[in-house]
Length: 135
Image (tube, rainbow, N blue to C red; front, side):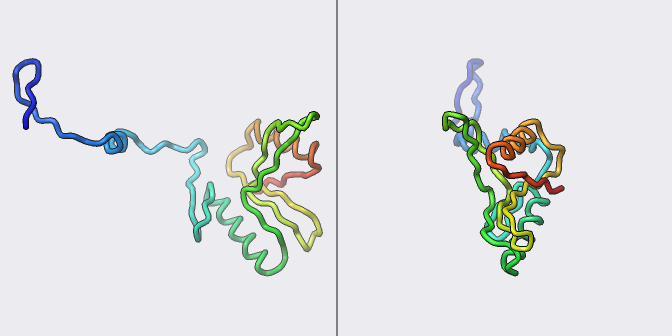
């Protein structure tokens, strides 16, 4: 049924849901560092570079060279009163059997941000863990 506008003309209004309206107007948001998220075997990675590195770690774990592999491991960084100052999220953390040590890896494609540099220093100061940056 046509609707009459203020000028007395008949106009046709097609109804769309709010979801359809928003989907039609919104352009896909560009990512800050132009990385493309990747899903491999149900695992989501933030970039192709991270996906390639982490998939290689999975193969190393199956071969028995590393153990206890965890992706997106959270490290809460506590202040002097026990309060959480911030949380560092590593791309990968595992025990390296060949080097006999715990390793924390962050895969970077772009130059490190100030926030990352600060959290890397806090990890070393508070936890004694030197975060390795892989490019």
